[in-house]
Image (cartoon, one colour):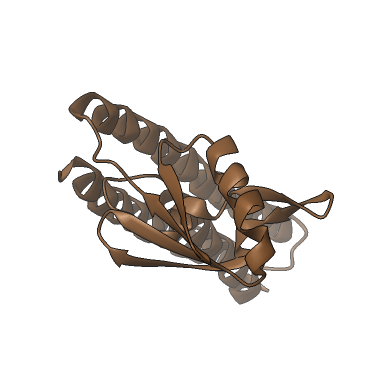
Amino acid sequence: MLKDIVADAEHKMKRTVEVFEHDLAGMRAGRAHPALLEKVSVEYYGSATPLQHLATISAPEPRVLIVQPFDKSAANAIEKGIQKADLGVSVRVDGPILRVSVPPLTEERRKDLVKQLKRQLEDQRVAIRNIRRDAVEHLRADQKDRQISEDEERRGQTDVQKLTDKYIKVLDEVAQAREQDIMTP
């Protein structure tokens, strides 16, 4: 019982860190990264389709993404979808492929991205703390129902707090690495 609660809390905290990393990958830093185009939706045969379902995306150079459509006739629709996403990039159709140029960021834009990163970091910290709160409430309810002893409840709370500290530290490390990436021209 106790192990299940702690394991469930750890799973949720781990998932929170993964979601944070995924969100940060899509945040535009000075370098081209395929995740930048992940949220782009393309109007393809009358329905909105995610770009990664229509093409492969690679980053052969630091400031260029190459988009290779599976269907060559989709190139113009993909170009329009990328432009519509308003990512601050320029798109050029080069035969069967698209070249997406990622311009360098201005200092002001870098600072705005860091502020956005800090807000996302705080949101994820709150999410980790909410997971801790739920786990502790569950432990207290089990102790009240006499499913676990007071010692087990305290041990569980200690374990959950250690997990909370561990995953908040992981979040901070991920955010710090991404901040350095953003601030590096």
